[in-house]
Length: 184
Picture (cartoon, rainbow, N blue to C red):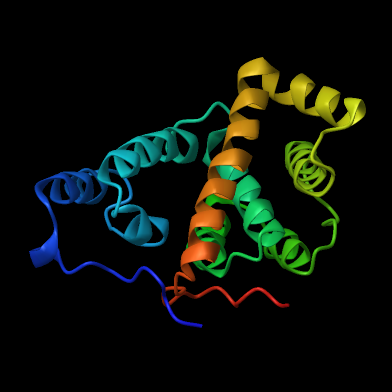
């Protein structure tokens, strides 16, 4: 499988691409990688996408630990190796246990999760699998995170689904990572 939209050499960037890349590199991500390699072909879209992602990843109402957990569930749902390679180590550093991560990789419901982790996993799995969230699962998330938190959780799923679709269609190559690749 070859990368359909490989990195554009910086010497070939347009002014708009250069500005979009600078915003990413100068922001919290610090590097132009993953979906942004493909997205850079549409610099205005790149800017909007990276700003939304910066909020969801670093400032959402559910916090970074739970955002990273939702990202892993989304990566698994889309068999997205790049998202997994980037976010699995971040999720570990954010406090998600190895057991929870390994169960998600195997498409199993993790055992021994904290209540907030269980609410996120159940919400995300239902949303990806069933394309909706059952009342009980929604009520659990609402009780723990409030309306803003639930909306942010929905948005994390949607945003990382967008990125997964971009990378799956572009066949973006996974970067070197300490994360084991997702099993088939």
